[in-house]
Amino acid sequence: MPRLKKADFGTPDKENPEWTKKDSKNAVPFQKLPASLKTAIRTSVRGRPAGTGKKEAVTISLDSDIVALLRKSGKGWQTRLNDMIRSAISLR
Image (cartoon, rainbow, N blue to C red; front, side):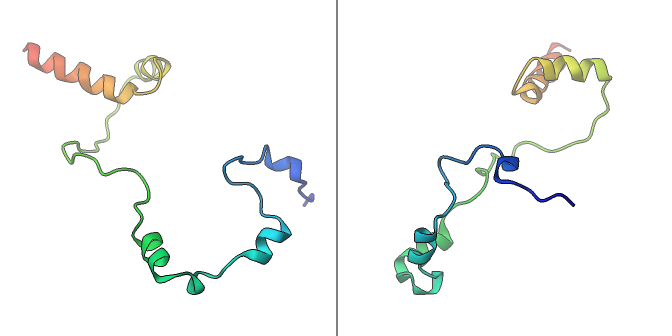
């Protein structure tokens, strides 16, 4: 197996740079942090915001050309499809 080089990992993340030896030396273990900071870290909200609970995930089969056209229309195509179905149903 070939050995990986730093260049193989792409450009570094500017918001989360690689730690230096000085950073590692100055790091404080979680157990030694002040109690208020530990509580804040444990209770911080992670991940995606909670949805409204009004939507339901379903599996549906569509023609590949329709899916390609919707995806080509850009980000949010699922929401636009939902709106199209809603308007089609209200017409009847």
